[in-house]
Image (cartoon, rainbow, N blue to C red):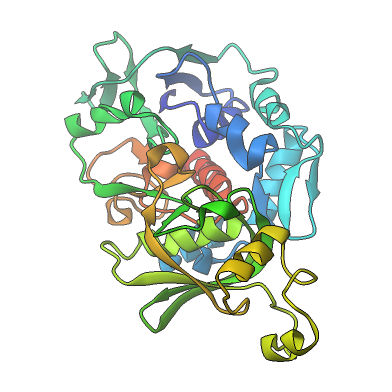
Length: 366
């Protein structure tokens, strides 16, 4: 069986590794970039956060669809597959799973190690056309016909404007509908952000609010930037924010005193001049100039940062276009996987897990 894989990212390479074990498959991988796995190398701050030991459907934008995926392939199975490739894993105190080396290149090396001659990876080869022919598929105008084609080309998240132009244009030649793309898992721009807080890192309970309605609540470390906020908890809040479409009247409430239910600002100030023994020095300096409640520090959201700072995208091929095996309806022999689909999860290994789970489900169906 001749199989073409479009894209050498997480889902494409994981699928290649799985299919390389099959003696009846010959695999050709088409990759637009000159090197494979660039997003894998950047994942988890260079440590590659591969998955999480608490994957649940509610961590994604389409929980019902993810419930079907998890019924076929859960985090335990993906962990077992990584270990069968020879990759030793470790789990941190928050359930995030990394390679034992905590170095993303180890992941890439494992995926590429000892691939047989039945696998060909063609870097620097952009796919601009897919054409059905005699029950098979032709890629571009190449001479070969493929029995199966798997779309694993991801999204333009994290790319500069020049590289985003025309990205995944080959989908228009099939054609398939696309839910409009928008950056997700990205920092917030804050209206009138206090510039003197730039570089301040602090833990807080973060609540995303739309008017008086609470949309999200999570505790974690945040980092103040010149004009906004970042940090895992902020990225998770941005995923909810971006799913609102055209969000209005949204703000953040930060509680720097979470875990101290009996703490009172009024009682503290009866004995102390300020909050120097409570808050980060930069926050205390701000309090001296402009007093605020450290349990309800409000920041008005102006928007999110752009594509270059996004870890994943919201949008893509609608899930209604694929069946339970991720085969594209109406196009025999065609599959879609990973971030190309309109599925995005929160931070912590959820999106890399989804990419690998798609690959596993498709490999078994093929």
